[in-house]
Image 1 (spheres, rainbow, N blue to C red):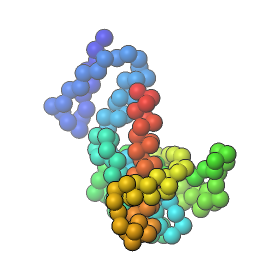
Image 2 (image 1 turned 90 degrees about the horizontal axis):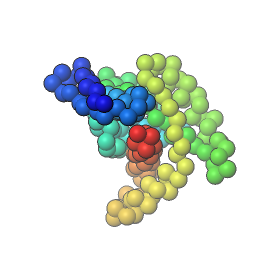
Image 3 (image 1 turned 180 degrees about the vertical axis):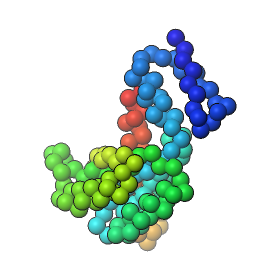
Image 4 (image 1 turned 120 degrees about the vertical axis):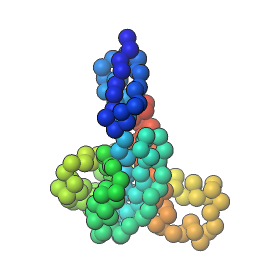
Amino acid sequence: QTATVDYPIHREVKIQLIAFSFASALTFCYLCNMGRILAIDYGRKRSGIAVTDTLKIVANGLTTVASHTLIDFLKNYMAKEPVERIIVGLPKQMNNQPSENMRYIVPFVNKLKKDLPDVPVEMYDERFTSVLAHKAMLDGGMKKMARRDKAIVDEISATIILNDYLQSIQSKL
């Protein structure tokens, strides 16, 4: 069977999908929404931010901001760009228990949900993102002084969180 789905954002665009199941059609429609997904690697001092393109194919680092200004930054960003979902890194230990950083992240996530009630907020496993960020900087040939910049590590970590999240969604298709 074939189903035609019209998206009001782009009237001319008609997407043909082969409807294997209702669930896969719903997942496909979720991915076709034109808003971005934004990821946050939250820290006590600063937070790395990454976003997808509007098609949710590519995760890119956006910036690093002081954590005490993060919600204001997000409000300003979302006034300019459509964001349909926010992903916050979930710090876990190797034994799958929450890390001690959860005591800082939970109040932030609660405030985020209160201040931006129309945007779903999810938490996603962030284990090893800092290690992977350092490896990416080494593999990318960054100079030693640049690799010491923790803001860059936070931004790359947010990008890794977002990329992993995107891969988890695509694997469910």
